[in-house]
Image (cartoon, rainbow, N blue to C red; front, side, top):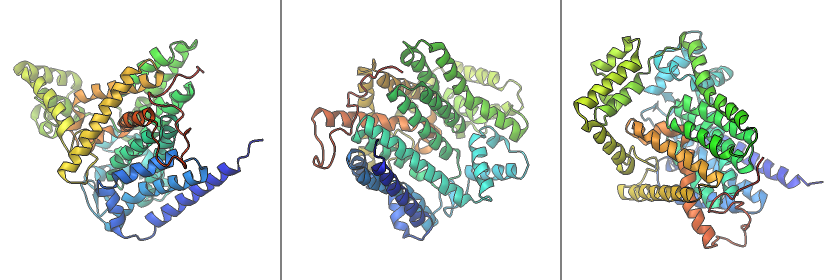
Length: 482
């Protein structure tokens, strides 16, 4: 009979560290600078990489639990810094009070909890609001406790994905994945926004999708599709990923499956689940499913005018007129057609701005959430990560016949197609990418993991096991079917 005592001890150690971290960082006072250092500086990047590499590569289970417990504490540090300093930013006052869009979301949540209808802006995407309202109902409207619960759940989901990637791809890939997730989410801690829910459910989708692909389990993959649909409906972003991942599932993963149509039908139904649930919630909290999606119109029309952001088109009379239109999308199409016909160069100007912003903008571009240093340091990190992303994409292209590589390639294609909508020029720090930020986290780790495996170089060789990476880069050797 298998001895489960070591696993029990490791789990107990991790649980103790989790409880200790929550109490010490989120309940008891702590010097503010400790947490703010992890929230606002770039210098913690190499420290985090080394710690996560250690956690993923170490052999002894109890020691692995200790390091993972430390990583859990690190993930809570930014919220500790916010609460102990009382800082304010665009979406929060004094580190606790929702502001700007967060205030609108909070107001409509409270209206819903007290039996009233939500306003238009919140009723358009209700999944996250209803989820928050459920927690608030159980906690007697304690927003502090809600923020803490969300950060704890997100930290655990990130560690779950990090451990999986560390085992299946390699410790370096796991390190880059955790660092990418940490730097993206650290500025969202303490916010009452849809990005928080989208990030959490997106991470869970990542775990189920990857574990299902690695182990050839269709049920897990379908659960991943359902969660990804929920995440993208709660925090819309690169929606084309759903389409390209679905095509990958049908044409590649199920290629030789005798129940191909059955599984594909189930996947399609679960992909539509998020849209159906969002509409159902909208009807219950707003009284109608016909909610004007002004922001979509503002973004699309801004692109047709030459690559302007939504705040440029917000108060244009033709956009305002869509509020009273019974055929808003048809009218939007006509508006865009006229704008392009009057100035055909608009689309080229929009494409130029999108590409320029994506590559060079430190506030809106790719990996712009890796901030907190001087301009030169941020540029080195951002351009370096963009280079790793491109090399990771090339690795996927080279190994596209492997199902795992083809999945990442399909998702990357969906993300690239989504950039044609100019998502990055509409908000700072890639807020629209909250539900799918796990994808670049995987891609940037493929190249360094490939180099580590190719040259058979391992830090602390006497401590770390050579068997920690089950699948060596070139990533993901084929596994037998289900």
